Length: 254
Image 1 (cartoon, rainbow, N blue to C red):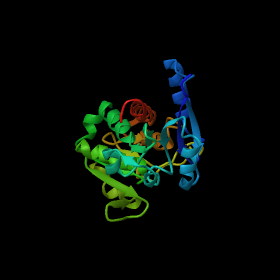
Image 2: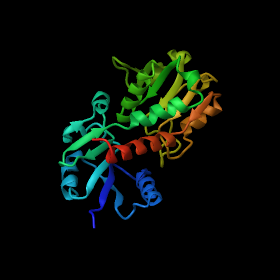
Image 3: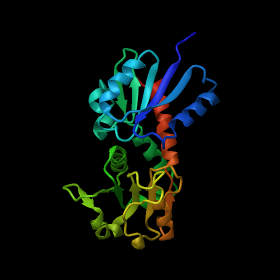
Image 4: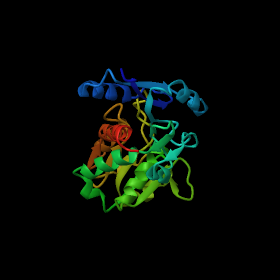
């Protein structure tokens, strides 16, 4: 009998994760649940990552990476896919046949593919995009937007050379078409939290995209619709897209 293949997710905390359910159901649909397993590995400190790899080295084939380790995982990897290197963040790891670890970023594909398929995309592409939060996922989204020819305005809690602060958003809101929430604000269990925006200034020319998927309709999206935004996009399709890309990498990409 062949060795069972193990996949999993590292991050902390993992109470919000959909990955185990998603991949377990996928294995059942494909009829491969006896040969494949997906588990959650809560990793508070990234320094414990080598121990995790060592303890599962015989069966482990791939990992997803989430908050807070998308960036600090990189020094522990042997190789980086060019896109992940440019983005500076990894959310998928493949364990190669020789045992080496190669990092990829599938957030890029999950976001780009869903945005291009959104029927509102034509109303967005000629205006600027406001990116809230500067974590690992935002780096992939920023590069995807730039590759689509969309100007990006980065927002952080403190103004810096390449970021505006939340207090400065009103000065830019008229030129913005897309607002992407890349922060964990609104994520379960803190479902009443939302980014600080001039919601009263939103109109039919503004479209909101939230990468948070639990709950499906976040407070950010609700407030946008209540304020007259032209439309909203939920985070679940992006999550599905990046998960499917990870599965493709684990099984086909070298």
